[in-house]
Image (cartoon, rainbow over all chains, first blue to last red; front, top):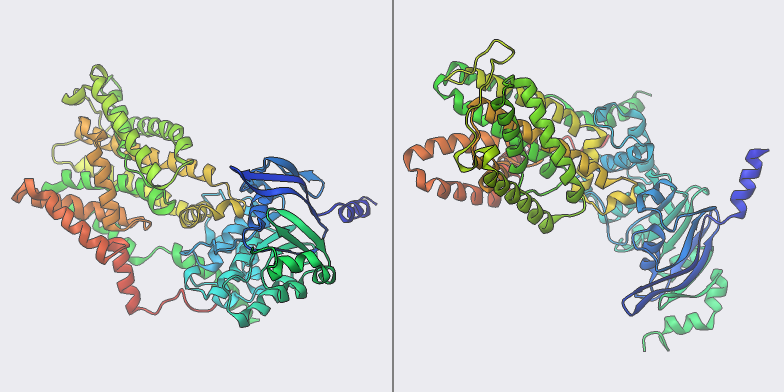
Length: 261
Length: 336
């Protein structure tokens, strides 16, 4: 009975939610009363013109920037004042717009590092790495699920750009996220590799709730079940792809009648 | 099935490759015994080389692996030297326990400093470590009632090593002692860098911003390795004090901090053997050159340093590794 109860709770509470999030840098307001909820298993997109505050919102949620006001909830628990690495341990994980990888570690080493950290053995200084078969196997399986297994022994900096973007996601997956925030996962990826990359994201476990920032509206309409539009540090509108496509205000922002004036 | 298990083995082998004890390593450590047979009159120099190598190894752990720059690492070398010297001066001349106490003392100070170190990087860190070094130097200089100031600490009375081996004039005991400590610390450091902890240090070096995003507590790791590095530097200082029965103020000097950095960069940082190789080249070259014209010694070192960093960005050992990998098929690139 307990398990059923727990499952019902998990369904009712959103995976991630914010209330009245505010942040200003000097006189510039970069987040204004941000309120949204990401349901369990969601695939939501965060869109908006440059400078709308999308990456800042991710920085606020992951604790890399502290909000001036407001609260952040991961499931039932409030995480507003938790350290970034604590949030990661609780399952809130992000990727970066610009590759933030480990250039001189091989892909397998990098993901093994992340797996070791999640399992709590990352500070162990007497165990030999080659003997950590469970961790290495798990890292290898993650890399294989993203079709990186053939390249896993190469140094990160020797990988093609599209493969590096996949490695970003592999590193995030190694932390066993419940909520995954992807900051422009396809940025700089060659056109023909983008579909593959988003296919991998769409194919992630339904236990992972995903919020991704993306500029290409075709991709957004294809892969997101709901879309959040941000302008000037606040949420302009949130809705299904159909609603967003029909929304007059979104058109104005994107067609530049007012947005780029 | 066979293919599957081969693939599985390959991924462990990827890590095993880096950990494997190579025959060149055995050859190297056997070669460190040569001075006992071939260069008996140079055993004192050999002992100093081993001590400097140990000091460079301590810097390699923080600079080469965790990417923490230090321009004041002599602080811990000097603390170890003075601690060992004072213990021996005030009636306890037993070397091994003196070594342990001195190293632990440097470690305690290192641990305290690590809370500041873990918060900064790059230029700030260089200035902080430089400041720490200068501060301790002047403190030791002014506390001449304790340290002997500029005259150095005199009157150390060392007991025989293990109660049997006296510290002789030729340096047989000194070199045996220093080499043994260097070898044991090297083995421990080698084990450490091939552990998950060691991998996380390389992660900090490669991308400190990413580490919290994979849930790694970088500051705690930095504090650990910095403390350990201070312990090893302190042990090196203690060895110098014990084997020479004197401590001069220059153990804390800026020159020593700069020299060890040069040695590590010359040899190749982040490779464990880089500091050892650098120490051998640097110390032997200094010994030879300074016989010819001592005042120009740093001219040649300056020239060598510029040449090495321009032509071999990863030091002499890095250059050697790249050169040998051209002649052997690379194993890193193969698919599992």
